[in-house]
Image (cartoon, rainbow, N blue to C red):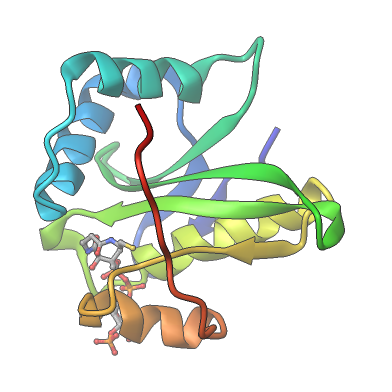
Length: 159
Ligand SMILES: CC(C)(COP(=O)(O)OP(=O)(O)OC[C@H]1O[C@@H](n2cnc3c(N)ncnc32)[C@H](O)[C@@H]1OP(=O)(O)O)[C@@H](O)C(=O)NCCC(=O)NCCS
């Protein structure tokens, strides 16, 4: 169980996503999808939520940033994967979102740092993440948090 990590200065803490966060998670998740101009079927978002809070089959982990007044202002999701180049699992930090009015206070950086600590705690110190090349505000933050690689991403959808 993760210890709650606080930022006294800015009055928020990073903690695991919990079942009672469903409504606020859905609001922030919807805003995140809008940011990406992405529309997912409601059933897909519902399945993602169930995976995030399924304690019997842990797979995807969610962390949230909670202010002292109880408001959740950001989230991140990550998963540990087996990897052919590493004996230990590697962590894929898949989603990160901070609501607009709370940006620039270190919440995004604190969420990423919390993923780094969680990854270290589960013995998977290698963490990677992707972003769009034109997401300049995220990349400014990422340039400080990690090392840019020269891999490009290809994909296809079969069937
Ligand atoms: C990218 C995103 C998560 C960053 O969240 P954030 O909470 O604003 O991130 P941080 O506050 O940690 O860092 C961002 C800025 O705040 C500044 N900052 C960080 N800690 C700070 C602190 N303690 N005091 C003052 N400013 C601080 C940083 O210097 C940074 O500014 P700069 O990059 O302009 O120099 C947020 O902008 C977002 O949700 N964007 C839309 C979705 C998105 O792009 N997600 C990522 C997809 S890959």
